[in-house]
Amino acid sequence: MLLDPFLIRAGLAALGTAVAAGLLGCFVVWRRMAYFGDATSHAAILGVAISFALSISIVVGVLATALLMALALTLLERQGREVNSSLGVLAHGALATGLVAMALVPGGGRIDLDAYLFGDVLTVSWAGVGIIWAGAALVAVLLWWHWSALLVATLNPDLAVAAGVRPARQHMLLALLLAVVVAVSIRVVGALLITALLIIPAATARGLGRTPEAMAAAALAAGALSALGGIGAALWADTPVGPTIVCTAAALFGLSLLTGRVR
Amino acid sequence: MTHPALSVTGLTVAYGETPAVFSVDAAFPRAAMSAIVGPNGAGKSTLLKAALGIIPRLSGEVLVEGRPLDTVRERIAYVPQRASVDWDFPTTVLDVVRMGLYRKVGLLGRFTGAMNAIARDCLGRVGMEDFADRQIGQLSGGQQQRVFLARALAQGADLYLLDEPFAGVDAATERAIIDVLKSLKAEGKAVVAVHHDLGSVPDYFDHVLLLNVRATASGPVSEVFTEANLSATYGGRLAETHLGELRLAKGA
Figure 1 (tube, each protein chain N blue to C red):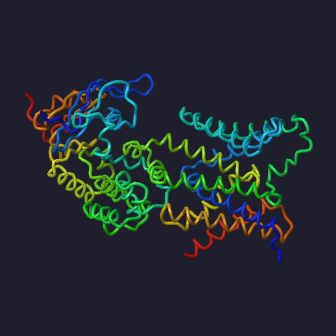
Figure 2 (cartoon, rainbow over the protein chains, first blue to last red; figure 1 turned 90 degrees about the vertical axis):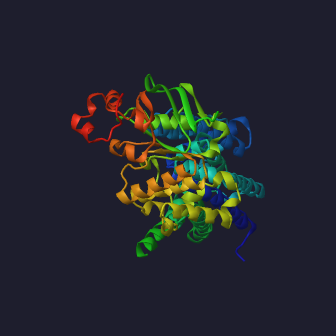
Figure 3 (cartoon, each protein chain N blue to C red; figure 1 turned 180 degrees about the vertical axis):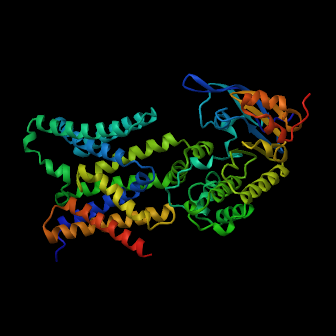
């Protein structure tokens, strides 16, 4: 049978990533945080370089850098300035700094940059799968725990304050979870395509779910289908896995537009 | 002594250097409908939001039934201005009303039938029971406003703060909303609304705060809704003819 252990590991890793990104992606879409996601995930490359320089675990380095970036962005937004261009500067500045740092790190020439930019899920270890699912579980549990408060804060921040919910705290939680998603997704789709995994399944679900819960479930399903379908298609066509997963997600999105039109 | 439902003392709010609300003292009684009235930019919505803690206040005190805001939050319901609600969100009318119950039912309560029964009952009070399963974004402005009132009702609060509840709504909705607010008053609850239509103040409200950054007058409509006070509040912005059409209280 085709199901070699490396394939099972890859499938589980991609599924875990799809769970985390699909759920959080709904809030990224509702709150229009796409650029926020870009900046946080691009900072991950800087995290990879730092991890190599300090000889620490990649997950730890990426998580720490993504967290710092997410917090910096949150504080920037709180200033109430026009943040769009600042986000652009930070997103691409972090990416470029990461790439330069990678070249400066001793032995950096031997780092497989492609694996961090576009993912390398076929070589994931069982420990890697465990980390991804731990991250996915953290995202799912925290979203479940704060679900009502997050929904009210998303629907109307003023209403949330009046009801005793602090929108700033909810926003901080989402920023934190975004960093977690980045840390677990970098192995699967790479830093450049993490935002795609956040946005595309949620956008696909947007036309399918009539309630926030239904949309989250649909985003989860669309993400899982893209992950598994993408791995299958990549093996069949001998294409890179990460980009093929994102292509599959995009194809599903197109399909959802068509069926939405028919209905 | 019984405390008023809501009282503000020395309330000052500023955006940057400019005060939007300056040193306002006002008290809003229980079992009454109160209006906050004044020209555009007078700080009406700002005062309401500062009283709720949505906007930080520079100075002053807000008391709800004599107690600080944070200890009585669940007894206050707020209906925001319609335009400030983000509609790019897949949610049904029933969901929006159930969100008003979120403090009461906690994490698992969302899935119990009791919550749905309360939510549907509140939709019935605003005449929207047939729209429970519609998407909120598909409703007209007036219908959306009624749904948000139902959400406030679901909370079972004692004090209702509404920001321009009649702005941009049809006559049927205005009627439906005013009936609900009058029933709240009959139940002994306090209603405070930012209001812009001077003509309906004497019909709808018992109590009025005339505001133009500073409070120009505050008290029963029958005493303070006078030509002198309105002129002081609006400056030259109210024409003589407009004043003539209003049913004003007799000035002292």
